[in-house]
Length: 287
Image 1: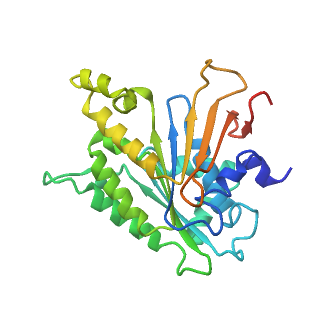
Image 2: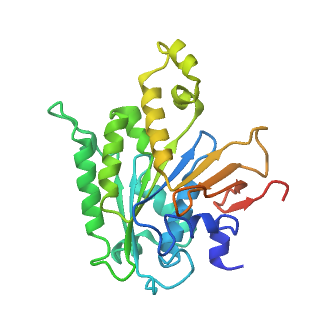
């Protein structure tokens, strides 16, 4: 078994390494949305996307050298939930050295929860402009010039976290659109727990009846998640087992990818298990 197959399980590899985000020759401007719920975190999956982009040399996770015939890939990771140390440790488990990748112009990290980004001394929230500036600066430190097939990819971890603290869904969506303009492809992770999305999944008559009990946070969260899901080229949903916890199953992984013509596409539902050492097994039901 190769290193790549150990890190990227065979059932997962087509969707991650050859999906809209990481595949060499993928469509410019593509959006991948990963939704998760409490008890079914997306951390392990985001690390696999990072590996597909960087660990295999940036050529779609095919295990080539850092310079491939398809060009180089540079990644900006913008995280609103976790610091750089968390991601560095996770990458190290997969055999990636974040410091080395940064020095070679392959990786940049932006902390979305720094004091500078959240400070509002004049009563005006400069958050979106500050984040945009930070990401632009991080992207500028990546590959010095676009090579043949070279591209810059943005990963956004927990954009909805800021909506829960301060910003509106409209502000968050506006920021994401501005960031995507300068990137070849983008991935964003969003929480999709039922209490947060209640405003969206209830029937219209129920929404009208419960209008007074639905909170502003629920409405903002629902709007952000649904709008991004509708715009995505690929949606990956993580959830717990409907039957409850199991020793050998961590949760359910559902992948829906839009076809090249924007219609139809492929869907697949798999089970996954994240071991204590960070390794992952992805398999079909009954396997």
